[in-house]
Image 1 (spheres, rainbow, N blue to C red):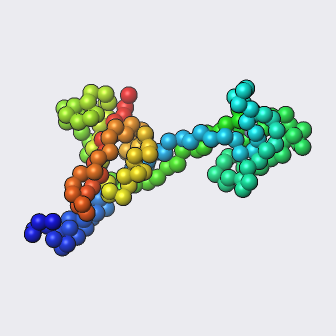
Image 2 (tube, rainbow, N blue to C red):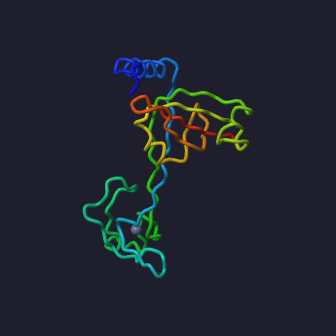
Length: 173
Ligand SMILES: [Zn+2]
C-alpha cells in the first residue's frame, strides 16, 4: 500500500461510495438462474427419461419445492406424480435479490466501447459493492428501473479493499 492510501483514506473512500449509492443509487433486482433438479416426490426412469410413477420421496423432503409435498399419489389413486406432472424433473423458481447500485444509463456510443457493443437498445453500467460478486456471477438477468436486462460482464474494479463491482447490462431487444 502506498503512503497516501492509508486506512483512513480507504475508510473515507468506501463510506463516500456507500453514501453516494444510498443517496442517488437505486435497487436493482438480480434474477437467479432457474435450477433444474430431480423430482423429490417420485423415482426417475432413466430409460424413458421421465418419472417411474412410483412414490419415492426424498428424506428430508426439500422445503423449497412447489407444490408442497410429499404426496403419496398412488395411495390417492393418482397415476402421475402431481409434483412433476410425471416428468421426473422439476425447475425451481428463480431467486430474486435486491441490490443497491449506482445506475448509469449509457448512450449508444458509450455502450459500443464496452462489452455491450451494439447488441442492446437499453444499456447500463452498474456499480455495486464487491460483496455482491457471486450474486451477479450466478445470474443472467437483472431488472433495472423495470427493464429486464442481460448481465454481460461483472468485473471487480480497483485494488484490495477499494474494489467495487462494475457491471454491464443491456436490454430492450
Ligand atoms: Zn415427481
